[in-house]
Figure: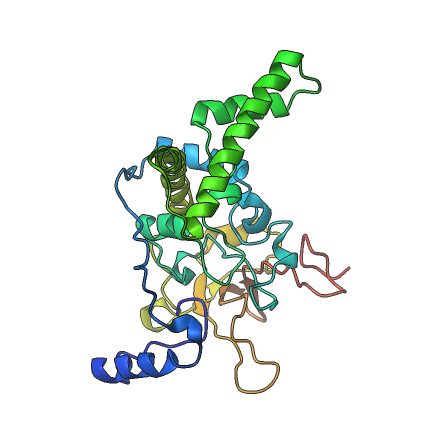
Length: 312
């Protein structure tokens, strides 16, 4: 499982053995029992191709839909709500670092990201984009834009208040229909049409958002610093550069993957840091290394400045 200490078992167990393990694990909890209702298939129809305009639209939606609150301004999983999140079992959890696509547990293709939006991630704070978990659910894109304009007004006229009320009434109806559908209530033809119209908007916005999230991460994880890619220190004459020196920008960093310590307590099964990048200079008498890492917890220690990493 990417982003965790769970290894793959393809080389350790054959396919038959793996299916037998799956069958055994499903005896642990009644929630694993096969449902009489087949799982809902997420349609990929209407896919919006990856393009600069779509990415730009998705960037706006990233803020508009509140993704920034958990995942942070640039997707590093360090939003203002990140330190408060817990999973379904009340365990501490962190939002995904969207700049590290190789750790996406559902896959990093645009289609995979889109499915996470529509289906949510079970057990986690990541909701499915449906009903009251989606901003202005039930409104068209134009209606949503208009309601935002009204909500941002310091004071509304009587006509504007009536217009706003109609939008909220329309949203309440769509949210109730979505809830009834989730609970298994059979929808009327009119209710189904209302739901389909609402989800059409959700799907369109989700494709744009998926394209934006896809743009935040490199196509693949950086190669590990081994073999021909090993770290090599650069020689300089005279004084070695300090941490803020522009000279560091002339070097390409080397990537060192990390795993959590799972042998003794406290075990780190889901570490927030999965790698460190290193650069180095040396002169005739000394060597210096620059270590950088992506840490959404901001744990720099009591004696260091969070902005620079230097001792206070």
